[in-house]
Image 1 (cartoon, helix red, strand yellow):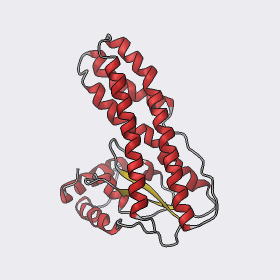
Image 2: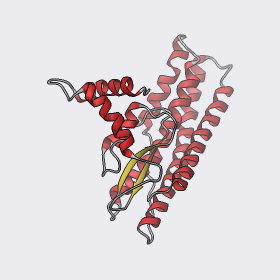
Image 3: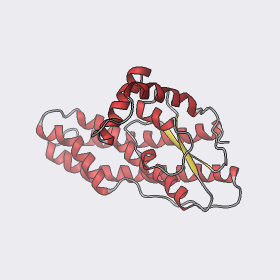
Image 4: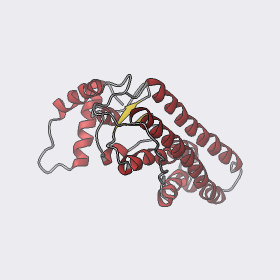
Length: 240
């Protein structure tokens, strides 16, 4: 079983990565405070990718450690995890463009800080999450993983993912939003469990939403159905 001690340690380490990214972004923003908008935007495009890269390296290292720790406890033997790449250059550039848009057109310069403080940690943590999934794909031992909410107020999407319990590879398990506090947790056991995590609790909330939303309607896209289901889960459970 994955223990609460293991989960809490991992959660704290990831929070430190987020904090490191936030501090570095704030330093950069302070340095560009008196620059003209175009110069400030160019400086952000030059400096922010390095913050994402450093955060990604730290997240990958921590997630590799977490993966190895659980594997050693449940399987034994030696295993050398590999680090996965994080956010692509185009994704980082796109997020910076989004962050500086209001500053450049004069519609909202205050958006720069809030947008970067939301998107940069998410992009950095993606390297760690990718590391767990990459190693699960490559491992000779069968691996399942669960998305375990570690914050006090998980959103409807995270509740839906948490309701699935430990599953084999799933692309939707690697979809993340800003400020997400869920932990992607591997397990090598035949009957995987994590201390303090009961997927049935989340499944009950999912079912409440499903009973209202019903199944997918004729002609309804998967995206539209998921949006409608999420809305029903929020209204029935008081989720965000």
